[in-house]
Amino acid sequence: MIARTPLSGPSAWRGDEIAHSTRWLRDLSPRALAEIDAALGTCRAKGIPWHQTTREAFPLPGMADDFADIRRELEDGCGMVKLRGLPVARYSPDDLRQIWFGLGSNLGQPVFQNRSGELMREIRDEGADVGERYGQIHDNDAKGEASAQVVLSSYARTLSNGALRFHTDRCDVVGLLCVNQARAGGVSTLASSVAIRNEILKRRPDLLEVLYQVFYRSRFGEEGATPDAIYALPIFGERDGKFTSHYSLTFIEVAQKVPGVPRLTAGQHEAIEMLMALAKELSFEMRFEPGDIQLLNNHVVYHGRTPFEDDDRHRQRRSLYRLWLAMPNSRALPEDHAILWGQVAAGALRGGIGQSRPA
Image 1 (cartoon, rainbow, N blue to C red):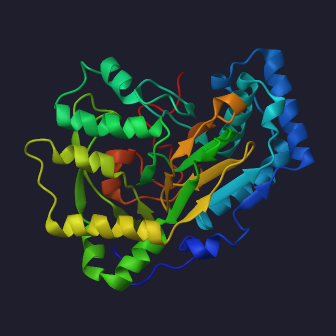
Image 2: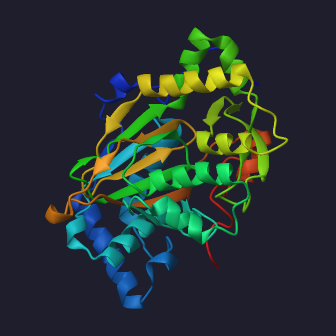
């Protein structure tokens, strides 16, 4: 059932408001840092590799209230948290991965980020030819040169220093740990999809109706080996009074190049254009510093990124570790969202690509 009234609550923020708020900021206390070091020592002593780190293997009982607070803010608050103060320079890369995976496993359940089963991805500039290299690896998978090029261009932007347009990831919460920052740029751009929804209702209620209708998308590059793995899903949805938006224009564009897929209507084109314009208008910028952790609820927050410039000479090279998390206090999703999420019940293990984690 679609509400024809504005949605209220802290998740319906505007950029100019949230930029001056501190409700989404948290700091790691000396007590928490000591407990993290103790848990790391336990894993080291037992020889547990980072990707096999579980909540039980990385015990943080003293941070239980902190994790509960963060979960509440992500689900019932503004939908984002920046946790500050992890002394990343103190640790080796493997220790950082173990710490970050241990924190993520205490907060939620890490899920796979691609078909190859990656549970943590390092986000950094892999060079201007990353799209070409990725294409060579997946040549046998590609069907339809134009469709493949859209996905490869998107992949190249993700792993290069180009700008990223607003989108959501396929998980309840996406987490980024900043290990190092670029010389310039690389600023996270965030917008409330709830506020965007409310503004469309105010300005163009006819287009709001369109966004609750199905848009055809391709699974190519995620689960599908060819662009013609198509599914239909609305951009906006509601259930039990809670909103959700799953949006990545790339996969809509790929689907449009597949024969037999219904073409976007004039209204759908206009609705997407308005959504993108409002995301920019209502957004704010969040810059990472080394040791910052950004957590975003994909159901209510769109994220993008400005271009960035590395400086290898002065070791100013942007590097982030990304986790995708299923959350134990997640909202229920509309039944028609099962085609993407699998499980739609509140608190269900869902999202990611394939199984939740290796056996």
